Length: 131
Image (tube, helix red, strand yellow):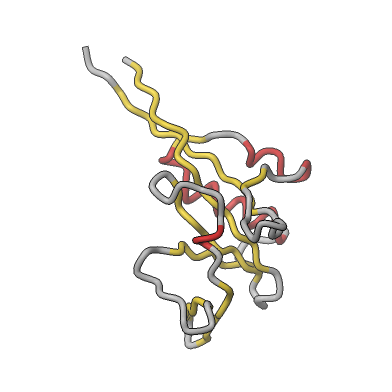
C-alpha cells in the first residue's frame, strides 16, 4: 500500500496591536472569507497571490514578501526590502506576533504605491495521509 501525504496551510491576518503590545492572529473578514479555509501546500503561491488580488482588486497591483530569519532589522527596528531599485521599509513585528515560528511563515503584503501594508501569517495545519 502506498500512502500519499498532503500538507495543509491556513492563512491568518495579523490583528492590531493589543494592550499587551502583542499581535494576535485573526481570520479574514467576511469579504475575504474564502481565505479562512485550510488549503493544500501545493496551492500556496496561487492562494497568496489570489489574496493580494482580492485585497487590492486587481492582479499585479501589489507585492508580497516573505520575512525570513536572515532579514535583520536596523537599529530602529525596521526591515528593508530592495525591489527594482526602490527601497521599502517597515516595522519588524515578527517577534511580537502570537504565532509559533516553527509552524509559521510570515509575509508582508503591500499595494503597489506602498500606502497599504498587511501582515499575513501562513500556519501549518498538519499533514493528512491517504492511500
